[in-house]
Length: 227
Image (cartoon, rainbow, N blue to C red; front, side, top):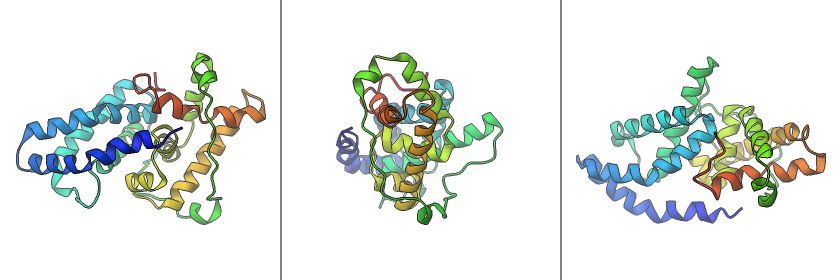
């Protein structure tokens, strides 16, 4: 997967984003609407792949922009606006999952400190197989269901790293955790997906297909994994 295709637009828009943020802080509603149009599809795609429900994802994105607008004064300009916005969307999605599923609270601010020293930090990429992915609807459903079973804090790392193509540093900044924590969570997510996929595929195929989510989301923004 080519990660640069995701990173470049964010980099190119960074300075323009800041100018629009300044205008928005000054009461220019049209400037903020420009930011909404710039990132609404991206946030919706990410939220869908975290929540696996389009209506809930749309609500999460709407709330994300409302919170961002209300709290523009809290945005620290030493960070990218897009990173700040994605973090709000991730927290909003996780909060909605907690309410919808009556689960214990899941917060991005609670780090797995023990992960950093107890798990391998050298995580090999799983090669995607576009031909197999686009030729098997059943396979896509299996992958989607496997992703839904991941713990939300592991799922968000997998979505950002393997599906959106974020670098380790970008993911760490968006989730406000350390780079070693991102590596450890990525390792856990891939390991758990591989174990679940092994029930459906030969063991030597499970690793090969587990990275297909990145192709599905990263290269086909109009056809997210979530139904």
